[in-house]
Image 1: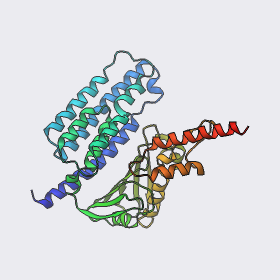
Image 2: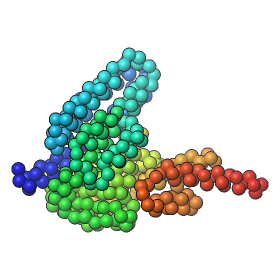
Image 3: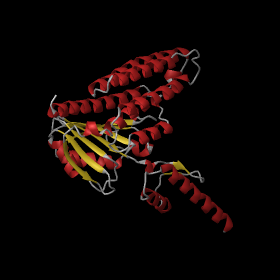
Image 4: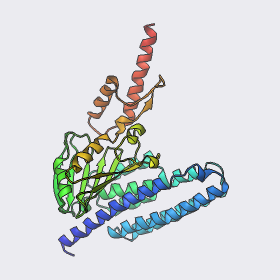
Length: 351
């Protein structure tokens, strides 16, 4: 296979992965248990059977990804072993109240902080060159959400994959994060790349340009905002999105095109429709509205819920964000709570 043929194959594989990524996320949301799924023993049994069917679909998706990227027999074996164990986890004897949500969370939607940290350590930058990294992370995954996170992090941080796809452009935003355009010529994708605001505080932004589609992953907006843009009809461009983390539910509910009935603890989806002339304006306005960790609402000691909006909180936020190293949201929260303690002490002393 020639170099150009390999680039074409990897471009197609990456496109297929983004599409699978979106489908898996949508299926996870649709599988979230409702009150009726936990109504009685019969409804719980029916719900667990539904999850069993979903496992078959998820298995097909992950095996397809493995085959298209030629990850090899060892990864295929690990995927089969993962889903064998996942199926065994659905075999339960006591269909007590609450079991539907418990099974769903533990086997489908959960994302353990320790696994996230392990992925960060293993998939840093563009330095992955050994398949055993992926194999090891698959073996440590305990939910579909974790498994998807592993695959996404491995693929999007794999220099062998990304460098084998034509790079059409790259620039850096005002906080030093790259905005990269990959793929093939697409007028809408080029306009998005050229016009992408450098002062918008996004993390790494990947834009995959295809003949009639633009796929985007914008880090640090709703954790990792996924956007799927259909450009087949330039008079009516569909902008489909998935926000995996509800940093601020009130802000999520106000997003343009949001599907309010589909909002759950596992994310939110939506759809925008735009003309070619308005696509960048609508897209950038939408991205700007997607909440970040800095918009998370916490309940302070005075029992009022608010995001980090006051001048006092902004001071802490900006100080922490501008420190060298990775953003540590929990350290920021602790510092804020410490300030609340100091304020409470001063108020008592002044009485």
